Each structure stands twice: as structure tokens, then as C-alpha cells.
Image (cartoon, rainbow over all chains, first blue to last red; front, side, top):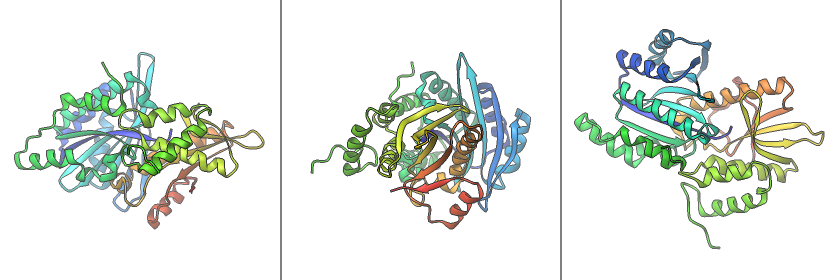
Length: 189
Length: 162
């Protein structure tokens, strides 16, 4: 259970209502259950708002309500398909003034299945597009990106610096699956 | 001393120690998967701490019998220890550097969600009799009083082992 990993999707602040709706739809299109909504308040208090299954309309309402008043919000996801399954959680936070991040967090065992990784990469690609994001990455919880901090990570710095000037990202989400393959040393095709 | 290649942020000395520890546990069930996690792709440093923590527990006289055992309630026990009465104790190894590394992970509260989700499942397993007890073993202690209070408020069982 120990190590977790996540895919982080980074977009320019703010998180517009239409993007919340599109990203939520993209998540519900690919997962079977969303449950257990919680948040970490600005004074660092963790609170669970809803422990049961949450439908799409309710999730949109909760994200809109708590995103602006919290440091971060969380909800669990579960997917079952072709005799496979995985669960994890999504966190949405604002690590810097100018951008917001949506992360898909999983235990290391989820990455042992090629089918899981393919499915998760698909979810990440859909959400990236829905959010009109400018960067995505994959990391272990104690990986080099986290050791440096995303804002000091070379690739991110370069892409973000260009993006700030041009409002266009040189990051290509079509290549992201290759990044996931390299990260785990697993071929996804 | 001749150091081997540095992988990720692992120093040569820690890498050498990891190799010796891996040799020590090579016949323990599940150890090969832990080693594979560090060896493949970009390398999971958390796997290194699992082996290091197991070595410390063994030094303390604990009987480490398995890594990554799949248990009910979707629990996979990092380090499985058997007590002298044959009761199962699970240690969850977290090698976080609370005060410098993974700052967004710590500041945003992602760490709480991670520990709570795991803790809830293990608490369910313990209350059903599947295991005797469980504990998170950290490589370093948080120094921020707010984090220490949160760990206590959230009823997370933990200790630092070195």
C-alpha cells in the first residue's frame, strides 16, 4: 500500500465553471463510482462532507462550493472494467497564485496492471482537454519532481515560462502516454 | 568505498545500503516486487524506505515475514510482522521528508487524505480481526506542531524509526 503516485494536470487559474462541468463529465464518463468528498480548509482542518456515492450534479456543486474556500478538495474514484478494477482519489488544489492543479492519486499496486495504466492515462488525457490545461506530469510521492517542487522542475519551468508569455503551451498531451510508459517501465500498447 | 550509480535522489551510500538490505530480504515473500518497483522506470523511492524500515524493525527483534501482502478491505500491507503469539502486525512505511520535500503534497493536505484512506481500511481490517494492529512508520518526524496535532486529531498511529 505504501507508495502512492499521481498524475498531475496543471491549468491556468481560475477554474472556470464550464471547465469544472466538462472535467467532471470526463471523469464520470470513465469511472463507475465517485464518493467521499472532503476538503482541507485554509486553516488546515480536514473535513469529510460526504461519505457516500455522489452523482455528477452533486459533485459539480461541491467543487464549486468548496474550491474557493479551501486549500484543497478531495474525492474518491473507483473504476471496474473487464474483470479489472482500481480505486484512488482526486485532489484539486492551487499550489501557486497563477495555476491550479488536479491530481489523480493511486497506490503503487494500481500501476502493476497495464490495463489500469491505459485507462488512467485515458482519463488524464480527457480531463487535460476538458480543463484546457497546459502541463501534465506523473510522479511517485517521493519522486524527483516532488523533491524539487514542481515550480523548480526544469521541464515545467520552461513550458510555464513560455505559456505565460504566449498563452500557448508547447506541452503535447498526445505524447503523455509515452511519459507514463517511461515512468513505470511498462509498454502500454 | 566504491559507490554505485545514483538513481533519482538516492545517494551512493544509501544505494549501497539498499543493495545490501535487498540481499538480506531476498528470500522474504514479496521482497522481489519491492526491489522491482525501485529498479524499473523512474524508480519508486518509497520502495527503498520499505526495505530500510523492514531492516530497522528486524534489528528491533521483530519477525518480518512478508512485503505487500494482499489482505481483505483492499489493504496491501507494506511490511508484515508476526508477533511471538503469531498475530499479524502491519507497518506502513512512509519515507516523506515532511519539512522540505513534497511541499505541495504536505501544504495542500494531500498527505492527510493519503494516510486517512489507508488508515480507515486498516482500522476496518483490525476491528474485523484480520490483523492485530497497524502503524505508519516514518523516516523523519514532522516538526510543524500543526502537522503533529493533525496526526493526533485524525487518530493516525505512527512512529519514527531510524
